[in-house]
Amino acid sequence: MGEMDNAWTAVDDYLIERLVPEDEALAETRRSSAETVTPGIDVTANMGAFLALLVQISGAKRVLEFGTLAGYSSIWMARAMDDDGAVVTLDIDPAAAQVARRNFTAAGVAERVHVRVGPALESAQMLIEEQEEPFDLVFIDADKANNPHYLEASLTLSHPGTVIVIDNVVRGGAVVDEDSTDPDIQGIRTLMDRIETDERLTATALQTVGLKGWDGFLLARVN
Ligand code: SAH
Ligand code: DHB
Ligand code: MG
Figure 1 (spheres, protein in one colour):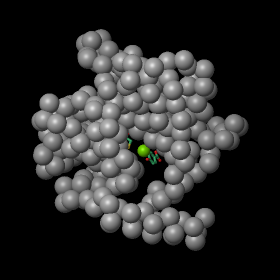
Figure 2 (cartoon, protein in one colour):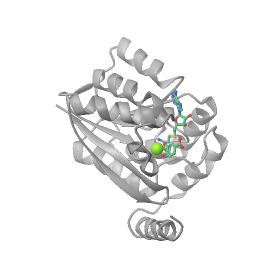
Figure 3 (cartoon, helix red, strand yellow):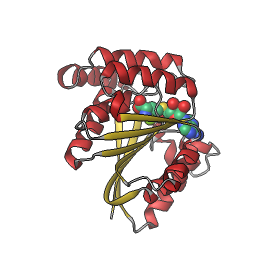
């Protein structure tokens, strides 16, 4: 990539500076992912703003997130909601949860964001057992190998009209490598196979380039 990569970065920098500059709480949230087990993999500011717009356009009052990290994407979505909105965000890394809670306070959204620590599939199963009210929007952005399971749990926790966004479904084009032994790629490909035949969902996916290289996201609506 090289040269193209530089251009993608320059354009993302430009778009973010013009349209969606980070305030200090978001900037600190991004920096603080250094304190987690998996630093630096939060969404870009323009993707965060895109998620926030989806929350507003769909009128979502309840958001479920798989993969909190330092809370960057949670903050964008929580800020897009009214005081009566709620984000439930799941992460396996206790250090991430601790950092995220600090960031939620600084960002002014601590009252409407709830972090659950543990393997996300277990936490989601608990939400199902607790008969948690269905969610209006789900953002799946944790370990990609479990994406098919996260989708299934999300469907159980959804209602007709629920919006589902899945991050990182292109991975520099690796998604089309049918012989890949990478569990993340297999997880994404199995996810695609499931969605292809799942009449509960209407879906599309778009490729993206930018600060995080070449990737993409999937957008679906529960029928
Ligand atoms: N959505 C965040 C980024 C999440 S990064 C943002 O854009 O700001 C992916 C996160 O998934 C990491 O914090 C990692 O700890 C978490 N994760 C990885 N495996 C997991 C699992 N099995 N269960 C729950 N969370 C997991
Ligand atoms: C990785 C995970 C992400 O959620 C992301 O946006 C980028 C990279 C990763 O696991 O490498
Ligand atoms: Mg991601």
